[in-house]
Image (cartoon, rainbow, N blue to C red):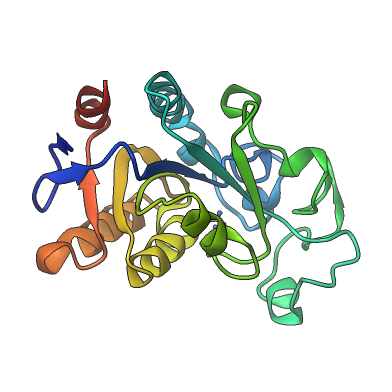
Length: 220
Ligand code: C5J
């Protein structure tokens, strides 16, 4: 068992049952012309974490620990896209519309691709998810069970939407969850801060948070 300096108290990391889960580090959220920008967001606020996520990924790979990636996306026929999700708000382009990086948030389109710096390597699992949470309408829960994974270290975007939704459900399913502060971002810095505080409040009610350097030191 390794001990990672974390809040609200040290995280006991078991290398035999931990995985890194990198949430939605795809072009649609981090580059101009994608889903994030169509909603009116400044994507530079989230692209700043790319180097930190890369360091975390490399540390897990070097330590021989498993890595899982997720992508928020929908089928080309939109059969997995509820009207409520497609029609909500007033974006400049809706999910499924044609944008500068192909159809917005559609599987296989250039905008949905994971950033090249963080691209999965052979053997890493990629979960395509139609929801904000990575368990909804995916095989993630079964796969984690089959592989004996009991602990999840989280990175990715956005902190208070897809990261937090997945982390909360993982917590309910009995996983120990640790979010790496420098490897997650929101379009709203105050939402990131609030999410970090909510997660670790009340004795770690949703899980732990830790700084990147402490995680790197702990697993190397
Ligand atoms: C959002 C996500 N924010 N990956 N998706 O719509 O957080």
